[in-house]
Amino acid sequence: MRAEAPVYRNEKLDFYALSRFADIEAASRDTSTFSSAYGTVLEVMGPQMAGSNQIIFMDPPEHTMYRQLVSRAFTPRRMAMLDDYVREVCSELLDAQAGKPSFDFITDFAAQVPSRVISKLVGVPEIEREEQRNNIDEMFHFDPVQGMVNDVAFLARVRVYEYLLDLVTRHKADPESFGDDMIKVLIGAEITNEDGSTRSLNDKELVEFSLLLFVAGTETVLRLLGNAVVVLAANSAQRAELAADFSLIPNAIEELLRFEPPSPVNGRWTTRDVEVSGVRIPKDSKVLMITGSAGRDEEAFGNPDQFDIHRDLRKHVTFG
Image 1: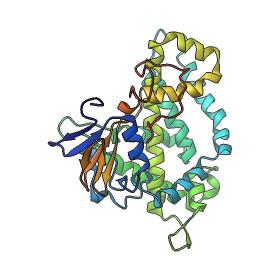
Image 2 (image 1 turned 30 degrees about the vertical axis):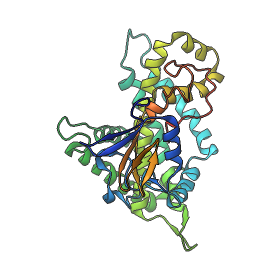
Image 3 (image 1 turned 90 degrees about the vertical axis):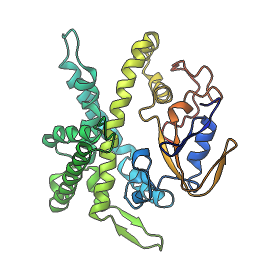
């Protein structure tokens, strides 16, 4: 596709697809033309997605305002406080497998770590975390006939939404019974309206904001960990290097995100007619940015199909 149809048109499902790194990077930066406000998932994109209060379904300046809230929730101090907890969780889960000939890496480790950590960050009580992890799993249920949009996934989303609404209510009623978690921070935060006035988030905004971070922080990290164990098993010499020198890990994570992205596609909606690589894309078109392809683009990365923890990786577009 990169060589022969960099702007691919799918008539049957009514979308365009970009596969080159340069085109995807440019589209990601041009938010006034390639909008996120109509959804970023092909199956549900459309005008009905506008006003959903989901930060990934927003454009600037609204997105910028909400992103400032994210920075308040994910401060370096709060992340540092979580560091010991992450280590405790990993040790607990791995200690339970000691002496066994084998174990299920996804079920027994990769699905547990991000769920527990993001639950603690959001403010989900420990006794309630496993039930919500199962609900999040069901939100990504794929039906052979209905696809991603199906009754099982919809009902699971309703359960998570109602749970978070109840959790917000409990936080407001008895804030002292909760720690310094994200919901408490967001309840106390103020946002600035276009006219310059400030206000607090309403309950719907609080729940939608928490829902996105709760779900995305669980599901995509699970995929990252699953990809990591497969890729490192196939590259045992590099795995040994990481075990011997932890300073190599940050760059290795970025390389892993390029090489095997947890989310390999991102949808956008065109707000005007636009030309990409010589192809005219009309206004109000669905455009799928294949970020997984961008990460393997020969024009952007040397030897792109080789996993290399030492790669001089200045940028990738895995997260847009």
